[in-house]
Image (cartoon, rainbow, N blue to C red; front, side, top):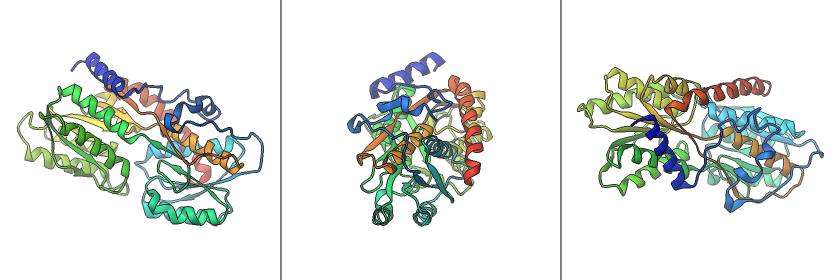
Length: 365
């Protein structure tokens, strides 16, 4: 498929979903003071509401667990914009450093309850049922709660539109291959990060209605505290050894960028040029390899975590200053690129990561 055809397929996928591409940086300097200008454009139409963060008021203390790891660059960008928004609006961040797991983020949240905070941010792994006891305890102490990428009991939250992400990637794959071929999906272990499970389910459901599409059993890619690049390589080497014939595998659908890199390494090692890779989530390394054509990564979706974090920060500050924010879902748009757009996306991501690292350093990040 030519580059023009790839872009056409991507545009078709977005049209079917009524999605529009917006600049990944969203005007970047980034969303700090400018997030208010985005207004309700990043809110789900079904949950659209206006609230204004008072410019003056008490010094709101916002608690956030910094539980990201070395692979979680998108999450780090979200934490950066969340805390930067709090600071820009006159609040005070209170943080606890942890690791990327449900247990660690719940431990961090419980520790934050004892830090004299006004608002607690909960996310990103633990589901509503898993943090309900923390939300209840916060309520008893007069602490308000908001969800960062996950629902939280009786609270507003901002999240990725997971099924729209799954549809965007699935439509692109279907158009690219003419709705035929054999595919395999990989992501972190089932149950570890729910959006990956939902997106994989969405792709499989859409393929189910295409009689010439076949989806092989899901390949588990371990968890964020493991060497997931190696795991991705091992998984795809096993897949290729079991399917040595050219054309036996059409595409690899990787919902997590380290597994994408591992898959690309496996393709190189086995000298397989007939398999294409479709990725979810940007990182510096992923975009460098995609822009250089190191691996056959033809398309990638992403979540604008910086937008999500800024909106959560606004919510937290509004709630901390006693503004009513309805307990509804706000969702951020789907970002996607083809291979020829990776270079520009890389420059944007590198600039954001540079700012994020410098800013979060003062908070233990």
